[in-house]
Each structure stands twice: as structure tokens, then as C-alpha cells.
Image 1 (cartoon, rainbow, N blue to C red):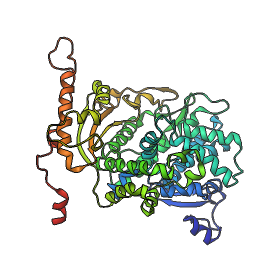
Image 2 (tube, rainbow, N blue to C red):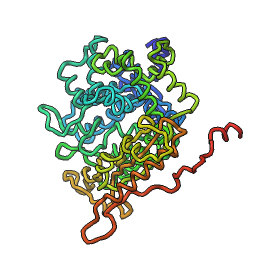
Image 3 (cartoon, helix red, strand yellow):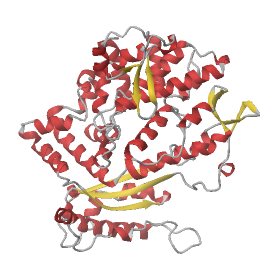
Image 4 (cartoon, rainbow, N blue to C red):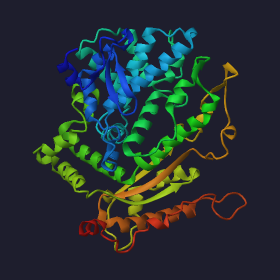
Length: 487
């Protein structure tokens, strides 16, 4: 391989005349996993426009606007996930030759890890979780569906011929994940890239570790121990019982990153602004329609904001204004938040709306429904309200052929009672009206509290939503931006 090709790829060739046959591969230096070997099959996928597109998709979406270190992209995450997928399946093949893991299994699992995020749109989950539902209400679309579409396009557009139709279907199902038995396929292989049983998969191993590393948040679990201490029992990947606390720490780290980073208030405010800008631009640029056209979707990246900025069409002026506000940090503003009791989530979801908050304005308030944004943020350990460890199976070093469940009381007494929380957050498009909106929202919450039925035999309500006094906006809030400029 000549030096020009290596420079084009951005990779390092470690081959020398003394290498063994197994060492004959191209490597890329990764800050998380060290030197990652890239097979020729992987390079045929990587060196395509469809895969290179991932260099222009931020892994952490709008969190990058708040955490400057979070500048990494889907490109390196997919390479890291492919590496870990290969490590897992090859490790199982070495430790358990009776599993009859074939070269085809190893290739397909590795390529599923490599291609699993091909379908992400601009700003990652912002696109499929927030923009598409508003641009196309009722549309059943996810980035996993996009990954399947883009994989087909990549294969056809680049004349990839080392995968047959059965391999492609297998890779797609590995990306999608399943717990339903698949004819002629080993079910434990579906635990590796997108584990629908319990969420313990290499996608999570890589993104949690990579995100923590880049934003400077500590990570207290060790995924390499999990890989080394895994084995297949009854067609399911199980873990040595000594790794139970390590797994608990993984799920807690995921929760902590969602709580502190992914769901950061300022990042969410900017997310609202980007979605508004895309919705303004959608009638002219047909952004939402690209999800069914792989050639158009290929050009859809985070650079969309720059495309809008460079535009001159009058119809895009409102979108350009929103992007300009982001640049000068004149963002939508956080107003208030409430951690919701589980039994009141449905009541709040139906009752606390922008229109309902407007209904509690005082005589001097002038905000309107458009000024108010309501979001219910869901944060959990990985399996909704359930303890994800309850879905993991373990084995003992004294009996490696029997799998069993480990109760949380056998792991630690310092474990959560609940594994999911819903947080009601209110924002405004008009920062000058924050105080008005907060007062009106709190009047609405107070009425909701008084309407909650009491528990049988008790006078106080079964649950109530408590305002955070520390978030109360003063009648004349300080202009913190002006203060920063003066300093």
C-alpha cells in the first residue's frame, strides 16, 4: 500500500518485513482502543462516500455546543464499535470452539458494528427523535432504518461484491437487534452489536467510554473485563458473577452521562433552536423527504446549518436568524424543571402544555403559546423503569455451563430503588418573558397538585410535584451576559 493511499485514508500502516501473516493489516490509532486493525473488507466499506459522511456527524449532537471536548464524530465511534465487535466474537471463538463460530460470523458481526450508525441524520438523535416527528407526524422512521437504507446504497454505489444477499440480510438484522430466534443463525451473535435482551453491547461499550473521555467525565467501569469474562450459555452471552458490580457501574455511568451531559439544559435549548431552523427550511430544502432517498440523505450532515447560513432565499431568513442567535449565544432559555413522581407522569404529559400555561397568565403578562416550550425528559439506566441487571445472566467459575440471575441485594445494598426518572422542563423562545412563564407554569402545577386524588385513608395527596426554590427567577433577574462582558 503506497504512502499516498495511507495519507488519503489517514491511517498508519504497521507492516514491516518481520511481521507475521496475522499482522498484515492497516491500523488506525484510536485514543480509546489504541491501534485498531482494519481488514480489507472493513477498508472497502470505510473508503466510500457513504461511510466518510460520518466524519460530519457529531457523536454527541448539540451537547458539543456546551462541552467543547465533545467534538468527536460517528466515524470514529463506528470504527471503535467494529473493533470491539470483532474482539468479542473472536474471543468467544477462541474460548469456546464448540460454538462453531465461522469466519462468516466474525465478518458479519464486525461489519454490523462498523455500519450500525450509517443512518444517523444531522445532530444524531436530534434528527430522528425531534425533527422527523414534527416534520412528518406519524412517520415510522428511525436511524436504524436509515442505516439499512444507507448500507444498501453503499453496497450498490461502490460495487461491493464480497457480501451476498444472505450476508447483507444478516448484517441488517444484527444492526436492528432481535430476541426472536433466527433460522440458521446463532442467537448469541445478536447480543454483540445491538443487544435487545439487556443493553450490554459493544455499541454502548464504545460510546460511553468515548464520550466520557472526550468531555472529561470519569468512567468507573471497565468494558475490557466484561469482554474477557464473557461466555455463551444456552445461546446467550453471560458474564462471570464477579463482573456484576462492573456491569452495575456501566449502567450507572450511562445514566450519569444522560443526566449531566446528553440532557444538559443549554444543549436542549440549542436543540430546540436547530429543530426550529430545520422546520423553517424543510418546505424549501425538503430535508425530511431525504429519509427515503439515499442519495439525498448522503448529503445530509451537520453541515446543513452552514448550507442554511450561506443561502440567500428570503424563505430561509428566519432559519438564518436562529442560527445567528446560536453563534452569539442568544439562545432559547431554560425556565423551570420538576422531577415527576412516577404516578403523575401521564397526568403531567396531558395537562402541562404551552396552551395550558398560557391559560394561567396574569393580567400584565404578554407571552403567547409560541413563547413556551415544554419537554419531558426521560432518563434511565438502560431498560426503562426496570433494573437492567435483572436481564443479565451470570455464571460461576465453579460451573461455567449454568447461567443464573443475581439479585441486587447480592451486588450491593447501595443500589437505587428506582431506575427511571421523568423530568418536566419548560423553556422559552423569548428570554425576556422567562419570569412571566415560570410564574404561570407554577400556578398550573399548583392546581394540578390540588387536583391529585388522595390515597385511601390519608388526607395529603398520594404524590405532588415540588418546585425547586433555587430555580425561582427574581422579579428583576440579573443580566448575566452583560456581567460577563464587563468582567
